[in-house]
Length: 184
Image 1 (cartoon, one colour):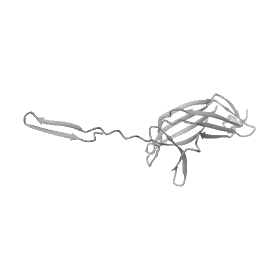
Image 2: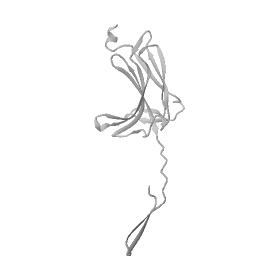
Image 3: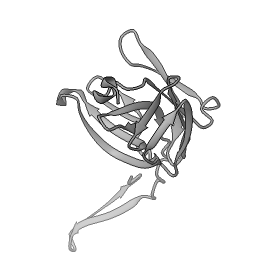
Image 4: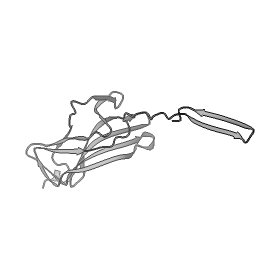
């Protein structure tokens, strides 16, 4: 055992998350900071999120891990609340049991019926985002990689009910009839 691996400075790892049909999906470009823009594939509510993760280890090295998991997360970040995050959707699956990795390996993942009830939003005080996170658990610490998704939600407007009629009055004296249109 080398001194570098004892302190968690083991082999260099490269994690690449590839979503299925990503090149066919519409890309949404968004601003990360003043000078930096990124793009994310567009998803809709109920659509499955699937793909594969490629994990590469430098030549002649191996990575001993305590398991690899994939997570689909929907989170709200409030900037005024000291960067506090609130997860409203969290799905996880173990994609590899403990073992070792040499060279490059690929692991598939799939989140069927992933609920995406809110639209992605990036504002001044709040950020609502969805992402896939891959976590490699090591004996000392963990290695994580995230990939953002952009979500649009199309809501069908409710049907308009017929009018509502109301009658108010004093017995044998006064009767007023109201008719309200569009009750919704």
